[in-house]
Length: 152
Length: 149
Image (cartoon, rainbow over all chains, first blue to last red; front, side):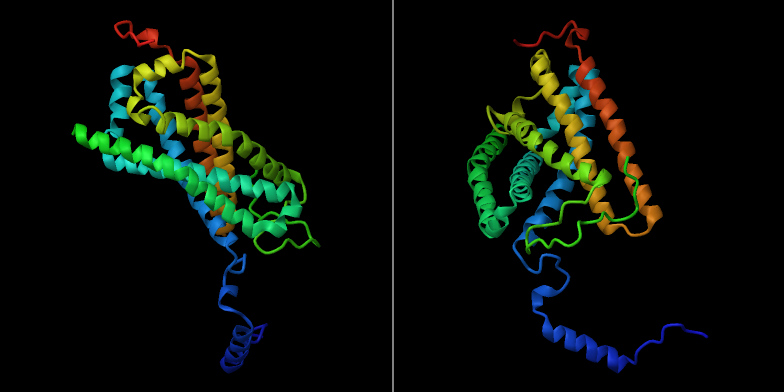
């Protein structure tokens, strides 16, 4: 016996695939949340989480340089005297705040299951809070970047 | 330490509505990990968001951070404790998050174990380095250097 499970003919496979496809909407493909907005907050939570932990790996090392004295540490923190690094820093702050607010939303749903019916509202409230927080923060941090560029 | 190469089990029978995310694990290590993520997340909400706002936003932001700033700040046991607690919780929270992601995307058991181990080792080394940094820092080792108080 060469092949224990006989392969269906290609035409039959195609027919099954087409019939299955016809029953699905576009958002049924490959999304565990079936196209729900939660899919996007899930993705954002992962991306910001990975970004934050990778920054933390570097940040523990750069902070450890403080044990080598003022000259070494001040040279390390002078990387922040660069507008591009400062923009990345704004991204880091945004990542932390977004991850924190979305984490709070996850906890609300996990510990108060009755809120699950209001999940869309909670998702948009989280997004609204994030934007509301980022407006003054961006204003302040971009102001610092402009100041830095003026100093030259 | 969780070196499992199998995805966690979700509780059977209950069906969460669309958009509510994954189900709570049924028990064992995974349930404790699930609970730890939420408790540490809640504490980090204060520690990490507070840290980011203090160090990167208010009062000239990171522009004022230098050796003198750290010397003054770490005169206070409060900030040393804050920074050390944040270090420990953030490393555990972040590396457990990486473990969840590795379980999702890395399929071959050997590679999965290797990837997890890599981050456990990095995490442990950074925990040691960070702990030594926070608790042994002593600006008086540089006598010519007088921090502004």
